Length: 274
Image 1: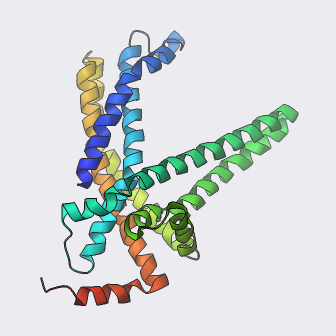
Image 2: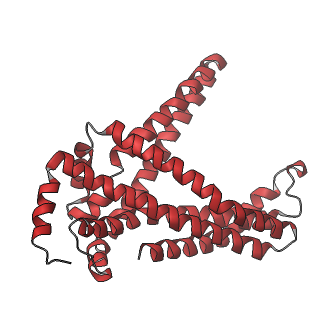
Image 3: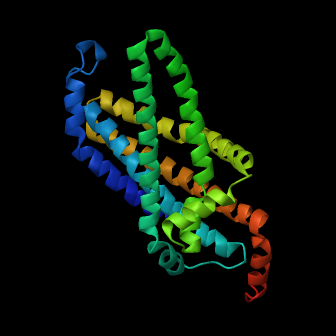
């Protein structure tokens, strides 16, 4: 089911990217001839727009995948396999919350970046030296802010899927739940993303090479098809991997902070033997 969600998101994102590729081609057409896009604006625009659309769509689908995996893993830890209908019945009614959280987090990042950029521009308007100093402060501030908020809210999707509480109450609860666990969660997230990056390069590189060769040979459609396929394969593997880690971290934190392991042991004892 998680794979199906990613596949649908990939196809929808690719189609949307293709639909807006004309605007990207117009932007490429305005670049000077030295940029190397002369005569290839439409081909490059379609490729980049397709990849961008796929990335945005799968980014919105990732919280849903995390919710699906959380419900399934939550049943697995007590020795029970949840059926597809059971998982979707629990996650389906919370899907809008999961997508909404992803959009809200993205909007918060955009606003944060906008504020930093405005501060840097104002600093340059006052004095170039002050502007350069502002840049030196803005870059680490951006990194620290993104890491801090991402780590403290990373368990919101599984909590939204599993607990069934109101949206803002769940966000506030996760914020309290992760208090005191920042560095452990951050270390696990960092290791997971390093692994993801390495695996993504291994998976995507062959598709990118074939797509580049097809594009150079004038086969734009084949190039876009191969590139989209590579993105889909890597996204499926990596989204399931990261989603499983988030789901297990959610259960782990609740065990450490709320004694969930005792409740799970009691629930497991009520299950019929496998």
